[in-house]
Image 1 (tube, rainbow, N blue to C red):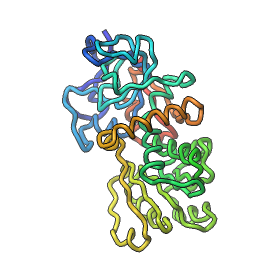
Image 2: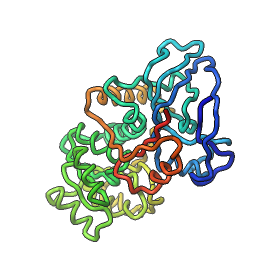
Image 3: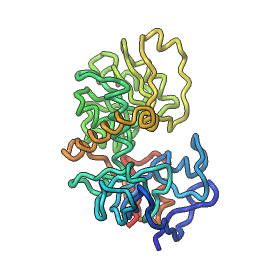
Length: 325
């Protein structure tokens, strides 16, 4: 019998418990995956607390991304076999040692990538690539300002931005986080929350406004970042870990700039062929060694509450990984 982090009511990490969990045999079009590592994100914890924009069914096993090994294949599955190393994801069910997944939603992990890296790769890097290449339609030579640059999607945006030929300015709050962003390939770093933050951004771009803002932060960071855009600038709304911002509509008009929403799930639903092709592209680039997530800390599954609290605090310089094996 395998174990899973589970609760019958939404609440803080401490309200969850490690319980025996048997996902059963895979059905038509399904595979059972022995999960080796799971990513722990701010949104995972917010959802587990019942405070996200949708509430999953109870009882609930948290988690949205993981990596593992196929241990059983159901009828009708031909592209995967026992022993294959796979990315797996979903809206819940990942903080477990084993679970069932639709085979069509799984992809094989590049040979050179570890389970730990794979567990925090797919969502962040696919989001960053979709945001920059599709929603912002960036061009080589443009300047990208990344807010929350040591977070999961922020760090991914730094690496994807460099790959796409952008001049990348990383905004991070501490020296440790700034060091992580630099290691990821940022051309310059600025200090989030500093009184002279806007001046730092301008100086980092040789006195010019920026072309694109990658914003997974929201809150008070959004308006000053938007004000730093130049003509035809694009401000990408990725998330709002610091709260939902209020932006006055005269600013897009006066600056001839755009506020652009980024929702990867909607892309997959509305344009599935495009989304699938982009996923293959991002995984291929990872296999070539171009992308590698930053991992701040690893926790055994027994320490799930500490892992969830670390991810929710926003203090980590990199991603939190839950080791489930």
